Image 1 (tube, rainbow, N blue to C red):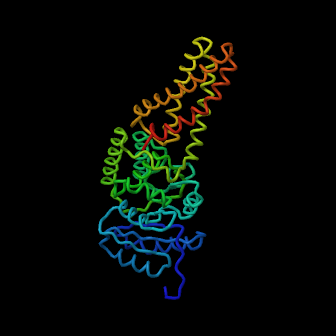
Image 2 (cartoon, one colour; image 1 turned 90 degrees about the horizontal axis):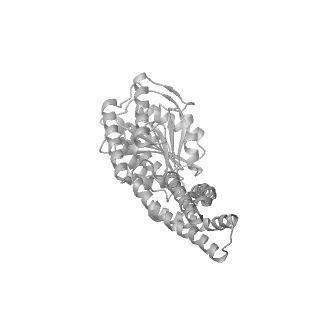
Image 3 (cartoon, rainbow, N blue to C red; image 1 turned 180 degrees about the horizontal axis):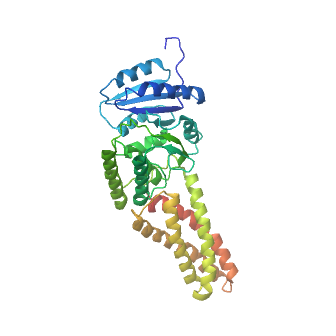
Length: 384
């Protein structure tokens, strides 16, 4: 760039290519990636080659590519680790959407725009390619196929995750989400992806999955056995954190505002209110107004706490569940005081009030109890 040239526009997308001793694949595949983005991506972009301690000609090739290809950068790290490379590259990028692809480009690049579009639009927080969707087309050997499916099945059974493919080297994240999540991720190697996704899911962030076409690279540098053992240690570490309730449960203030959270809570609250009224109508003729209201509210409070725990506040697994339900019962008592007090006031003012009047009073009192319940759940029961 000469002195009179205008400054380069800030990239909307930064695609990181982490590499270690990739002197054969690096140049042709980065050129292919650059040509694809130049032809198909409608916004300014950047490609960052994150070289983590290569000992072959990779650094020289990366430096030359950065000098020749517009919008291409080279980042040199002194230590190995894909997670370490991604953390460094994403942390210093100015782009609002960050992505990474494996240098072998096993994933077909036509999926790149569908991957990042939900993040650019603000619909999602993280996007991942999945090789396990019915619409995906995958070419790989039986050993890798079995290993991948067993790994993801193990994640679902031990950590109760909802995403389907943790290790596909084709992911994107909003920069503001990355800023919040990266300090929480401990792993610096291959388990980095999985840990990031587990924390994001527990935070209630939106993880968008797209099916991809994927062809296995027979010259892959991944050593399956050490990588698998490291992944198992990572799963065990996250499992212990879940059991102790120490895994960070909520960073969603930046990406899922209270309006969105309140919408989920309101939907659950509407179902709880309906259930409360139906149960009250069934129980009060037998147990009386106050006892029937107490039982109906207790049953709905237990279901309400469980639903909000998972759907509104993003907690998964059993970690901290007993504490949440214990505090939820305290919130239940607050709601009981409000609704029970409303019934008592009705009977004091109109001793002959009928069943329809009681239901009307409960229907009027429930919104107040619901708002108070939300505030208590957010500030106390499910406090990060």
